[in-house]
Image (cartoon, rainbow, N blue to C red):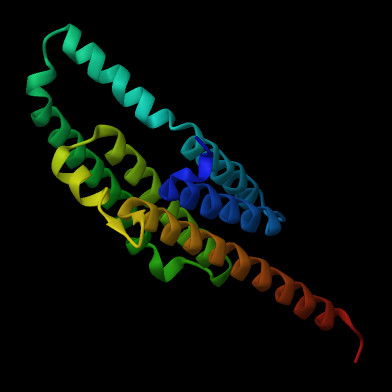
Length: 181
């Protein structure tokens, strides 16, 4: 079976690779280097499917200790905790919106999109049947989760390009300020 027989998997690999390359393009700042590596790891993870293997191992352990039937309560508690952490994370940005410099704006947007992506990975890992039924629906041959991956990767790639553009123009402005009149 070819890696690209699964359109959702191919979608994830292509879009996460695109985001990694976009972040690498804006690498003048360490933040973008780290995101380039992280998005490359996301692409590799989509290809290998480690989150599914981990989920199966956890299910095996829960079966072996006899708690598999009671997992729904724990799953929903984990989802509630994750959403609470996300809201706290996002409130940090909301509280500091007035203090965000234009230079940090694109990095903040990329950071929030990456946080949402990590939340999506963890929600998929927790695997609540009602959520799985929603995110695994197909739209134009690709599961909804693949479209979510693509949207978040595009946000990060766009932020990287816009930050790179901002850095280039601010460097030009600084150089012109230094020229004698």
